[in-house]
Every structure is written in C-alpha cells, then in structure tokens.
Image 1 (cartoon, rainbow, N blue to C red):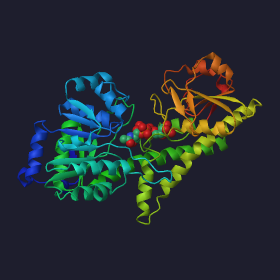
Image 2 (cartoon, rainbow, N blue to C red; image 1 turned 135 degrees about the vertical axis):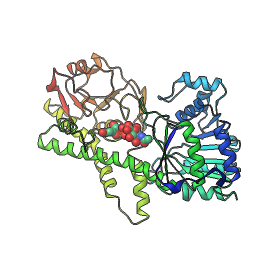
Image 3 (tube, rainbow, N blue to C red; image 1 turned 45 degrees about the horizontal axis):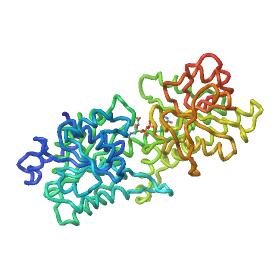
Image 4 (cartoon, protein in one colour; image 1 turned 90 degrees about the vertical axis):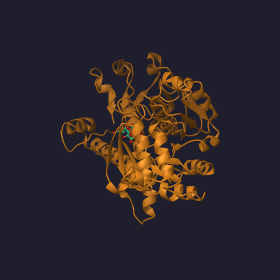
Length: 456
Ligand code: SAJ
C-alpha cells in the first residue's frame, strides 16, 4: 500500500538502525505472523478487526461486554458496516477470536485501542476507557509489542497518559515497546469510504515507533499518512471534526437568520453549493448527534484551557448546535398555531430517532432531545424509525417504534421529520399528514401538498 511522509524526521533512515525488537516485529508484520489484539469491539474496533483479519493476521477482539463477545463468536454482526457473513467466515477460519480476558494481551504483538471517549456531564473529557485499556496493556507489556491508540482524544493523551503507564513497567520506549497514535476515521454507514480505503494518519512517539506502526498499517489500509508525533495525529483528528462542527453551526445560525428574514435556507445552501470552488456544503438540522461531532471539539477546548486559550469557535458552535432542538420545538408550535392547535395535548409523530440517515444509532441523537422537549410541553409524542425498535427518553422512559401507516398519520396533529431516512414515500407521508415540520428537507422532491410542509 502507499504512504505519504509529511515529516522526514518521522521515520528512521534504514533497517539496520532499528533495535532488535523492532526488527523482530517488522519480520512478523511482513510475514503476517504478527498477532493483533484490538480493545473495543464497537463501530471502530469490529470493522478494523475484520479488515485486519481479511489481510490474514490472526486477530483477537477484546471487549468488556459479554454479549458482544458472544455475538462475535457466533458470527452475528451488531455493526451495520460489518456483515455477519464476513464475520462468521473469519471466526470459523480461526482468524478472528473474541474474549473478555485481557490476558490475551501478553501474546499479542500489536495492540490497538478503539474504546469510546465520551464527555462527562460537565462537558469534560472522559478518558477512563483509555486509561483502563492502558493499564491492562501495561500489566501484560513485554518486549516486542506495538501499541496504537485510535480513539479520538485531545493532543497529548498518547504522550502524557499512555507512555508513562508503559514506561512504569521498566521497558524502554522505541527499543522494547513501540507506541503511536493513529486516529480512527470511520464514517458509520458510509459504503464508499471504509476502514480499508480511508487514508490513515499516524504519528509514532519516536521515529522507530512510526516506522513499525507504518509497516503494520500499510499492510491493512490503502494509504498511510505519517506525521511527526502522536500529538500531531491527535490534533489532526480533533481538527477534522471541529471543522465539521463549526461549519454545521454556521449553517444552523444562517437557518435561524433566514427564518427571520423569510428566506429558504435550503435554497440558499443548494445555490451556494453550485460554486465549483471554495465552497463546501453543510445542511441545517435539528441538532448535531453521534459520538464524534458534538464531542470531539470539546476535548480540544478542554485541553486548550490548560494553555489559557479560549477556543471561541468551538464554544460558539456548540452553543448554536445545542440550540437547534429548541428551534424545532418553536417551528412545531408555530405550525400547530396555524391550525389553531396548542402544543399542549397535541399528538406529535417524530419521523426518525437515529442521529443520521439510514442507520439505527439513536444515542446522542438530536431527535431524542426534540422528543423530550415536546414531551415537557405535555404534547403526546410518539416516533417511527424502522432502524430503532425502541429508545429511552431523557427521563429514562422506554418508547417503542410505532408503525408508519395512514392510521398513525391521521392520529397525528403534526409530523416532524427528524431523520432523513431513505426508503420512505414522502409524497404519501405529506399527503396523509395534517402538517409536516421537515427539519432535514427530506421531502424536498414532494410536489403536491407543498403548503403542508414547514421547513426548518
Ligand atoms: N449534520 C448536520 N448537518 C450536516 C452534516 C451533519 O446537521 O451538514 C448532523 C448529522 O445529522 C448528525 C451529526 O451532524 O446528527 C453528525 O453527522 P456526521 O455526518 O458528521 O456523522 P458522524 O457523527 O458519523 O461523523 C463521522 C465522523 N467520522 C469520524 O470521526 C472518523 C466525521 O469525521 C465524518 O466527517 C462524518 O462521519 C462524515 O463525513 O459522514
């Protein structure tokens, strides 16, 4: 596979300069004898395990959830981007195994950390999963091992948190063990860009570490981009997602302004998108969900405060994006008002609970926040999402997916499109609904009954 070297000093000059354990590990990598362990069998770790297994490396998935381990062992995929067929084939071939037992780390030549990095209730980084994984690795650390952190985190995590835990074992960085950061770039549900063909950034804590990490990742992923340090690699990832969060917030702010000016933000964005250069299209919505965009920028904002630096773009973007569910509630109130109906006691059907189209992940979804807000105004709220059989609202109450049919539409005083799932007949939906608040412009191709559609 190919690779780009963005910094000449990031690699050693030649093979003979490599310490013995590095040379031994390179040989295992080249001959596909290297045993891989991946900690965290989620939407990053499981696709990576399958990708690595397909190349021919023996790979063991490690997770704390017994149920996930059982599903992997049964060849039953719980991740959209991994088919049960490909998973089962690797398990039955003995290439891919799964366990909750961290003792397997002692036998691994390469350990990859793919655990969640959420925020605490106070919007500060929660790296307890990374620290827990690092302690398990350190406990079993032996000469000849490469450790790479893929979880998205603030610049400095690999250098300041992982490295000391490994060095406490007495083993020497760059001689006995090798450490790098290589941020995951998984886009759940994206059939075009997969783990295998998405360019992969990596930065080793020493040039030897980069050399070893690059040798492995090149075997698995089409294109590697080597940078000068793990801190640079960590910053690359949070920059990518901050770029996205800020631009989504910009278009959300313009949606709020266009609402006041009587302009159609969707028309504005579509027309601006015809500019063939210097423009990138983002779309307004009911808020920003998922485990990346609403979270990653705040890892950077938190770290920046250590340098007495206020990341105002990040704070403002977060403020605007968090405001959008409230704007949706206002649009629903105004739509009902036109029908002389109060929000109180009205029947509201939300169409879509997932945080983005055509997948079932509803955690951190803005649709849940819209659901909670409308419930708090004592509307009778139900939802339909074929990808989400049930969900838990902000108060911990469980709600089941209701069928989407003429009866449920007729029973509704207002339908709110919160996720733009494909496969829905929006012409039929609008024709059979009293009014539709469309927060995603999902019904953009509907011609008849346009007067029933209220756009964000
Ligand atoms: N959203 C908008 N307007 C937009 C784009 C997204 O409101 O123009 C909303 C989505 O509805 C969703 C949230 O933002 O609620 C996040 O959407 P996303 O498309 O960014 O999807 P994610 O969260 O799955 O982001 C992943 C990220 N991948 C990694 O972190 C490796 C992100 O970096 C990718 O850019 C993104 O997929 C992608 O491009 O789809």
